[in-house]
Image 1: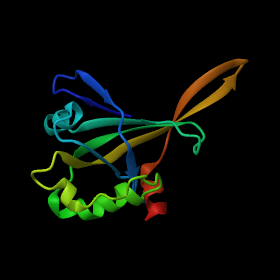
Image 2 (image 1 turned 30 degrees about the vertical axis):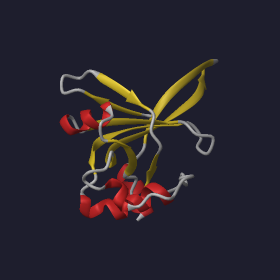
Image 3 (image 1 turned 30 degrees about the horizontal axis):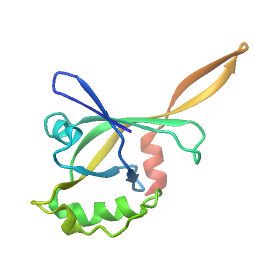
Image 4 (image 1 turned 45 degrees about the vertical axis):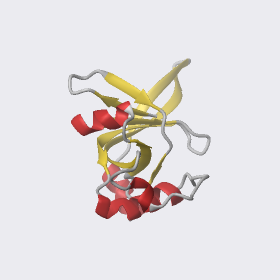
Length: 142
């Protein structure tokens, strides 16, 4: 799930399939006329939420996003199709994201990442967000 917002701060949530590379840049595709795509043109701030059986706890992230530049579409498409969340319909080509296409490819550079952990304190279930050191994580992945 991604969260975008208007320039005045009105939030908008969208469910998108996304993938990420070794440095935790996130890539997804969307219709260019989708509300969240339009909002990103005017306000690049974005937040992500991911809950998966493959991770212990949910992930929260925030960063800056934009449509992928034409010169980077091929590389980012490789991330989108072949990253850790293998895409089920890998028939996409860079031409699917051309200047007259309805589809756009988008990328977010994460600035903050948190893991949501459930713990027990004094007999009470507590949910906490633990910050993740992105610099250390990126260094390990590259």
